[in-house]
Each structure stands twice: as structure tokens, then as C-alpha cells.
Image 1 (tube, rainbow, N blue to C red):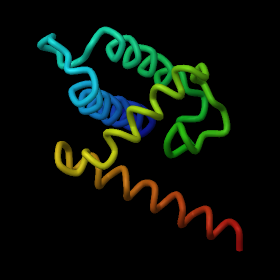
Image 2 (image 1 turned 90 degrees about the vertical axis):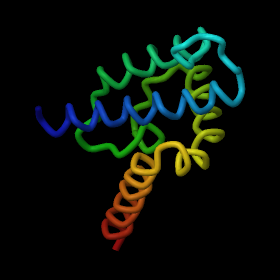
Image 3 (image 1 turned 180 degrees about the horizontal axis):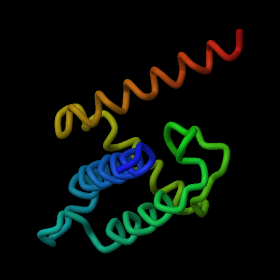
Image 4 (image 1 turned 30 degrees about the vertical axis):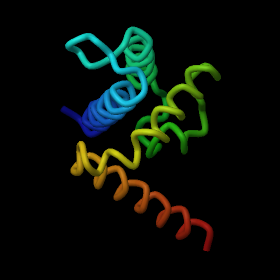
Length: 116
């Protein structure tokens, strides 16, 4: 498995965990899957977009991407879910959260080096 594929899988795994936290806290789904129909549909949409992302090799996360693949309403729904679940990730999935923070830190450091 190449690096880009690992990156795609990790991004999907992180997104799914964040949507599960969000849905459980906001929608209280009755299904065993832990996602309501709207969140399941949003996850499927996001996975499709991640799978076909043309900038996966160079980007860190979708928020930092120069090409926005998401439709505006889906993008806002993802943003809402991430705002809610982001702080809670340290409790529910600490390794994923720490890895995410590390990548953001590293990307910021690279950006500062390029600005000099």
C-alpha cells in the first residue's frame, strides 16, 4: 500500500470517528451503526470525495486544500461536525487526535519555513 492510500484511509477513519461523536451527541441515533441517516449519507459523500481527491499527495487536510471538492452545504455540515467533535476526540480517540494535531503543527512549520 502506498503513502497516498494510507493517507486516504487515515483521513476516512478520522472523519468517520468524528462523525460518530457528532451524531451521537447531536442526533442520538437509534441504529446500531451509531449514525443517523443524514450522517451516514454525509460520511458516504465525504468518502467519495476523499477517494477522488486530486491533491491528496500534497495537502494536509481538506480545510487547507486549494481545491474544494465539497458542495457548500456538505462543507458546512462537515465543518459543524468537526467543530463539535474536535475537542472530544482527545477522549474518544486520543491517538487519532494527537496524530491530527501533529500533522497540523508540521504543516504550519513548513508554511513558516516557506515564507522566510
